Image (cartoon, each protein chain N blue to C red):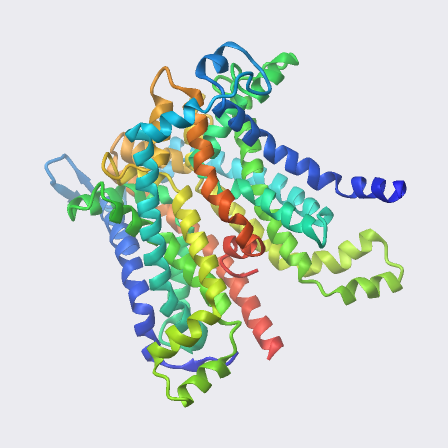
Length: 293
Length: 272
């Protein structure tokens, strides 16, 4: 679609811009402000420059939280993307089955995040939980509040439970957009199931898969509520991811300077990934609109 | 006949197994909500021996519980209305015009959707305290526009770009002013898009806990915060907690059927 050049259109964006500026820019400025100052209370601040940034970037605590975060995000991506793709490929293609599948699969996505935590807490506890009780009954020493491995496994399975459906739905939308003629042509050529996947479905879904990877990376990168409810970051600091650590530092200990510096670093990483996301999305918008007109 | 049913079962084995995996924890929550706390702690059974609605009655009669639901509903509704109303003209501008800084603004909005709520928790607390809005519904509603306005703009822009430009032009030739055209002709055309955007604004505001909890203490405390505070107290009542959880799943479960074909679109910011 050909867009017209009209700078007055800025007025239409103004209400949204003002609201987001109020909710985003002012708090971000506060954060930047704290990140370069120190205080001894009484609202007396003095300039410390990049001191807090150096402290955070050199602190073992930040490194540990960052590594845990990367390990967590990488693990859930490695499970959710192939699993979601496989389920989307085997889903019914038409009829009532599609709607039933879509609705049931989407249900975990619409549950408040703290309730996801509560569900898994109740499900995995060794005394009252179906999972914990059964595993212990089978002779497996499972206790997510005391053992690091069990805590990690619980959080990862919980995340797979919570978010794999998003990958399924995205892949399914990508699959549904493939014209039936492609499959007919493949059948005439006598292509194998694998060849159909490799040369028709996978290339057609590459964009949707990229979006899925980026969305899952972003959301897992800022995960807070679920580990907060289930493990509280423990046992010890074993499941203290970046957001959990940041909230501990900012609101628990009220270390404004380091917390603010960490926020800025955190936010810069997010902007970097958002930029990749934006490039992929808008590039394809351009291609599809160019191709259709 | 038997061969075809056998094929059917084999084919849908993976999705069925996956759905069972999804439903089991929810089933467990449901059975817990129908048991008394004594039964939960004393015996282990796969279904409630003597099903009881006592836990739900506690929630509907205890003000500290049901006011949590009311508070959540109030700020979520306010947020949905504000986000969609602000996003409508903006999405129209992005879908129809090129203007100064449009691409930068579009990207900047996206970064806010992607921003970790943890980064904003403390500054939000200080901002809304300093302007006297701490512990009010409007504070949470405004704070959640941080991610919901970008979301609504991205979703609506996708729907609006599907409406041919000729409709706008014909309306202007027929003498419609922009506001009249927008309300009378354009809005009905993208009604389903508005519905999808509203649904996702509602949903993302409903599932968020960190910001809502940070900005409230008593008067506007959301149900999510009521639940976590019960968890941290000792001697907690698992049955009531489970019932509260089931009740927070209901709003999503009730309306999900109507947006089932747009779920992927909502989560992918209108770009699938």
